[in-house]
Length: 210
Image (cartoon, rainbow, N blue to C red; front, side, top):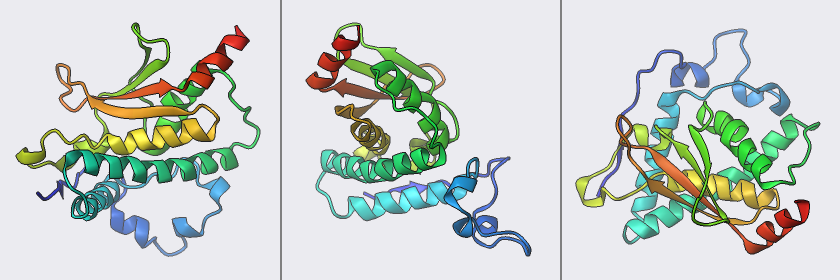
């Protein structure tokens, strides 16, 4: 199987070339201080290309879809750890979240905007299990530009996003098991739901706050 990226031509994004080779008098993004790069966007072209290359590199070293999703989750986890460090560095005056809903709202808004350019489309609590929450993205960028062969059509690239969320939950002392599931609805065939299953210790701690 072979993954491929369909590089987007999206208005409002800078080209990959202009990001790598800034005009005279402009500072290269890699030379800017971390606390002064808030709001700086990576081009959609660059992200699609890099994610596709990562997929192709990984799929040559795994056996089957489940193994590939596990590796994507691990890669996302590594990104999530670094993303959390960056967010904390940029906003040193932010308070540490101690409640589950506050933590999930932080991921639903701040983390999603930082990583994917917009906030997630919904945040819901399971009606069946007390320890489960769901964050949904109607059009996840990790799936938008990736062409998946029919023989691996069940592959969910959202496993990468799930790894990011799990790393941030763990890093903020809300240990959880996070997985990605494709839940298409009318108009959004790629809609992905990130299922967050909290560890027992988190639920017990939450009870003490009530």
